[in-house]
Amino acid sequence: MDVVELMEWLAERGCSVVFKADGERGQGQRWMVIVSGGALGPEGVFRTDLSSAEACLEATLEHLASQQVSPFT
Image (cartoon, rainbow, N blue to C red; front, side):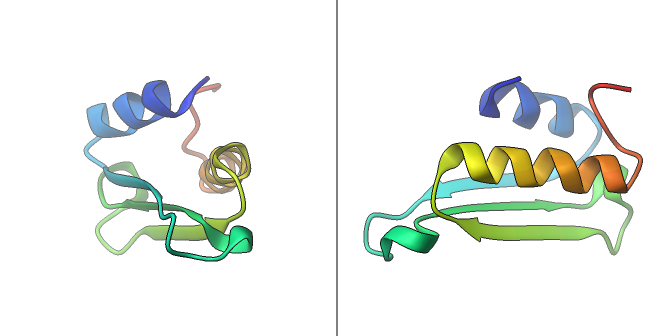
């Protein structure tokens, strides 16, 4: 699953998703993902700042699985 597929899947479940690359930030936290609402519930928010797009994707999928919200189940 790539980022666009995951964002589409989450949007279909009512989530808002931000996936950002910020060249002004340092190498260690240049990428950011925020997922909120929808399948995560009204108070459900997940955010991570990591060094690569792949790391952000993996962290997001792990968090979703821990919340029993996964495109693989």
